[in-house]
Amino acid sequence: MHRRVGEITHWQCEQRGECKARIHTKGMEIVKRTNGHLHAPDVQATACSEIKAGIKRKARDTQDGSHHIIGEGMLTAPEGTAAKLPKLDSLKRTIQRQRASVLSAPVQPTALSELVLPAEYQRTAKGAGLIKIMIFLKKSKKSDFFDLNQIFLI
Image 1: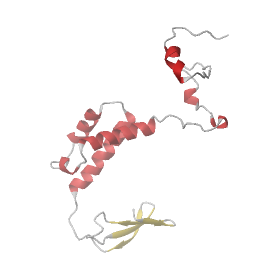
Image 2: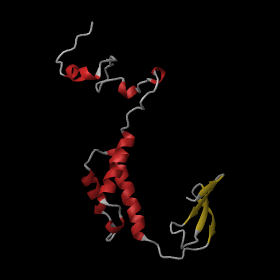
Image 3: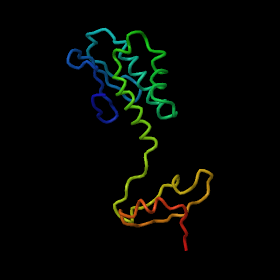
């Protein structure tokens, strides 16, 4: 997408410097075409986009390992597509980002009035309510506290 003006979306070819092809759409309908493409279609680039979208979707929906997700994405890839894909480390980082966006923790509050726990953090996995207890201690006593076997509340 190049830009949006009202209901009309302006699209331009990915090869902007070489190709002057443009279309204008309103929703899913093409309302105007300007110029034709000056190059052949890049089947590998399209396949790469589909593979990356599939990897992102699988990362959000499953907890499979990164290598497994990437390997499954490559199974249906046309020959020569792997050369156009990002490096393995970049694909793994993409998977981590997708999972982080789904499993993100609540924002750190800056004031007591902002301290609100989302509903999913207010119950145990079995649906029981939780008791909220705040504990304040010196940093020097932190290790002593976590070494305790029992804590008694009075």
